[in-house]
Amino acid sequence: MIGKHAGLRIGTMVGGGDAARVIPQIAVHGFESFNLTFWQTTGTLDLKETAKQVSEAIGEKDIVISALSVFGNPLTGEGNNADTLASWERLIDHAHLFGADIVSGFTGRLTDQSIDESIPRFAEVFGELARRAEDRGVRLAFENCDMGGTWETGDWNIAHNPIAWEKMFNAVPHDNVGLEWEPCHQMVSLIDPVPQLRKWAEKVFHVHGKDATIAWDVVREYGIHGPNPFVWHRTPGFGDTNWSDVITILRQSGYQGTIDIEGWHDPVYKGELEMTGQVRGLNYLKSCRGGDFVANPL
Image (cartoon, rainbow, N blue to C red; front, side, top):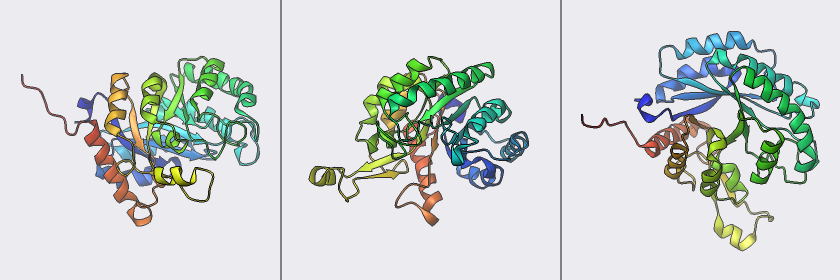
């Protein structure tokens, strides 16, 4: 009984243009929400028609569309990112047709410049987008992936470090601007995600279900700059994070959103084992949520 779990649903991510075809195939496994995603652009997709098709695909099932996401660099508009900013605008304008109130993605950054140098452009772009979203009852959430960037250089995202978050939220001080958080991307930077979440939970609007495994023996022997891999992205249930703690902290902060599994990254549960891993992750997260609802005695 989903409604009895205080609104904290467990779902997965699907490609926005393919959602109407994929959702009926995998909803049968018990996913309770879907995050629809686009890479760099929504392209020529008719979002109004797509929303109609997705609604028909869901039918009478107790399933929600949790967020619409576009992952690109809206700050430069260069190359394949030429349509990313316009895609943010389109998703903000059409979110209500999907029943969603979150639009998410990367912040972007000034190519090969530091986070500090990117903040003014971030404030310009997302200050306007935040106002547009406010007018439509939409919240904006930033994925916390570094995309191979550092504090000094990168080409995708500035929202991968808590100091950057402070700068971002000071630059765009809107209540409808927050985080699309997951432990994996913090663990890749050897950040402990649990105390971080305890501090930042009130700014977390959406959670991606992705974990990591850290090979501490490799870190201790070889460090993090050698040729030996020291961390792997994992589907929840196969990594190092205590998701019961994560869900407890989210509940204590009043979180009323979803945890949507970000698949297609696990080094073991991939290929023909992809959905095997995702469904295991789904059921694992449901158990961390408290398992099946049990009514109190009258």
